[in-house]
Length: 368
Ligand code: BG6
Image 1 (cartoon, protein in one colour):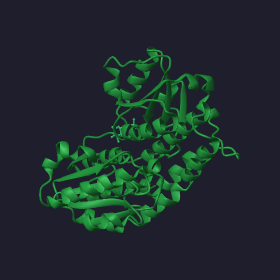
Image 2 (cartoon, protein in one colour):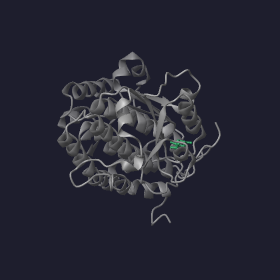
Image 3 (spheres, protein in one colour):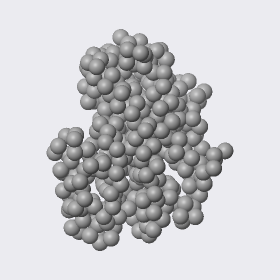
Image 4 (cartoon, rainbow, N blue to C red):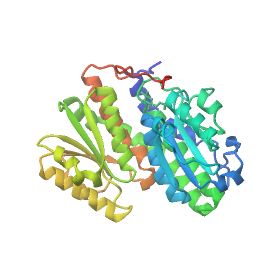
């Protein structure tokens, strides 16, 4: 069933363009409007929402972090992102006007389920983004937006993460449509950009030889990841993949936080992945991250840079560059995370580890 791949994870990474395309499929009409009737949630109710809280665990929570940037930008609704178990056991301020968005691949994660129940008891509406049909979280939610990633076998999530991002973008655009915070042609424009992403993801996967080679030769005991804006959750996800698959100490930081602490960790030879924002996006962000690369390189870090094709500004400071196709900033995690997944998968495989069944982890954690 691995379809000729070494591992389920290799296959699932290869399936990512399809997972994104399938999650987009059938959710727009010919006029380019989003048709999420499947949510069966009253549009009038969506207009009353004054706060969104995204709850999830692990990789799904990082998809939620990206969702925050997109939804706040498109819909002007405040979005909080919280680990489900932390949300559940504090006195979160929730009302009937709160929309709780629960993200889960399995739909069975007990921490997330408990948070869903808690939110509904407080009067919030819960919309879940889930991959597994017939699972518990969608049954207990007011509305469901399914990701169509297909079954994910490897314990650590890869293609489901991309499908979660895609579903979160659709939700954000739908809210913008219903609430009128974006013009229809702007929404249609983003949808067209989204539909172009599967081919770009394919380009990254097909161009993965260099990162695989770097991964095979990596002997460091610690790897850092830096990103800014939507690159920040991507950095955290890159670090999580490395911990889960290769049992290597890894941390993801917000690049802006570097000088407030993490820069003390920089020592000669330490590998640092840096996710560089598009130079075509908010100009100051790009140049700030370039300065970060310069700073850590000056202290001896080995800089492994993920940058947009054509961004020659990274060249003087990068020990390695992994290019990704040009994409709108908010959608860029769909391509920038892929080299990091390939890196962790390859490094773990090279060390003889079981990437599909990492030690101590389970695909769905049904205890709190
Ligand atoms: C963990 C898995 O147990 O649960 C992670 O090892 C996953 O890979 C997390 O991201 C959340 O799972 P789910 O099914 O709720 O998305």
